Length: 596
Image (tube, rainbow, N blue to C red; front, side, top):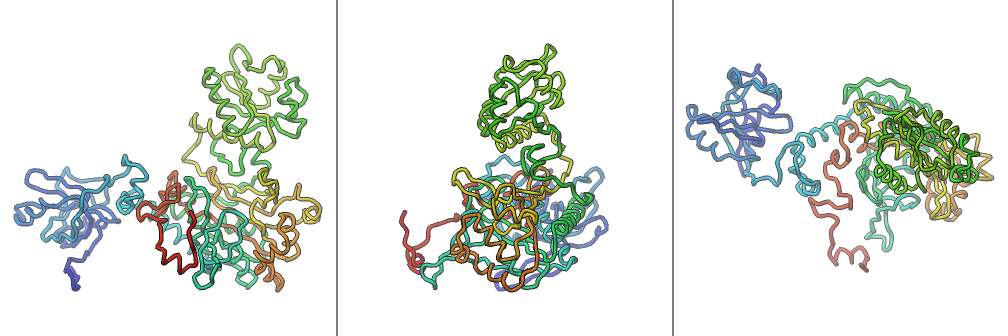
């Protein structure tokens, strides 16, 4: 037993944690420190559960042992922080608690120190507590005492340590890149930081270390990784935060297969060490086109069926103009089957049509497969043979409901992808015990933004086109594929990357196709293209969304539940009140004036 002394106080220092004691320690005198979790006063004996992050131990106060100590224990309340010294004893027969590892023993207290008193917490410290998320975030220090939150952060720690060990074993070097960098806006908005000593100039917080890690490849550090904070000033949702964490990876003298191999090895290791799940590599691969046409998304959830069927060829010449005209205008017609849903009422079907429109489609055609035959609002436009051909193509049976969308190629498949997920949830088809990992590859290099009337890089401007498309790129961006890839887990993109451009000439072509002038390119990215002039190796990499990965491993629905101090959906920290106003003096030092 050790007593800690300083100028302010003396207290008993713990010899064991609250999750450590077993029957092997029976008879020993121990010291425990922790929070009072629950109390039970059972007619002359007080039982308290003492908690720390390691577990819970029951401690006992009885007047026959020490009447003064028993009297003091009656004043103890939940969340008081105490130090106790006592003797480990075997619990009496019939009182063993099989739900906790320390359930065979308790500690009969001989000495008590109250280290800190506590007010009644704003909500109960237990899982499945009925309290709003905003309230939890305001009192985050209380929320983090709950078992689920504690376990989430402990899992995050284990995953980070496993990641570091894995990359060290594979000759990667962890290099820290700057948080104050040049603003190069080409994706989400930058967070800007004014410079006090360079009047009128700003740093940006990095959206990713992309340019720095490419420069590290030019510098000869052929295997880099970093668990790094990134910042994006964008609208938030459950899996987005203004600051988030990536596992960032870059490698020289590699192609796609090399990046896949190292990434798959990390996932196999994490699954085994953290979840004790065996998962075999290599992972499946889907092309972007295949993923869209089968699942309606580039991050498909393959834990259930309901795959999309393209119907364009089948309905190309039908009298129903909604189908035939869509195909003539380079659109697509496709459908899915909702098994057993032919019993839907008219009201349910009308709601389904409205849902489809809200997802961006012009409308929805449905066909009921009943005992009497086909039932559809467009029956007068489609013959029995047409309907039979559609039913046969999608694999519908009696009792099923066929859902068909005719729209632009992108809208058709993406809306059906959303409907597929909706029915996967409604019909409880998703196997939540299953883990599905696969790659999506062969993305287009560019995507057209109808609002801005311009092309954007689908990944980022430093992604290399497919080698066979480089000559084609000089003439047109249409049909040019990228050497880009995403790793998908259970319908969530958990990592994305590409083989990079490593020559100034090819980089200039891509900048030109993106509408970035040579002057803009020099101003924004000149430091990178200049580096390429001095011998850049072929290189590529990938970045894992660490928060999202932990969320999936922990079985949570929001990354806020696996981040210690997250922001709300409006970017607020309710606990410390940030963002907040600053003084006029601070603004003056930064040469800034507010105009609201």
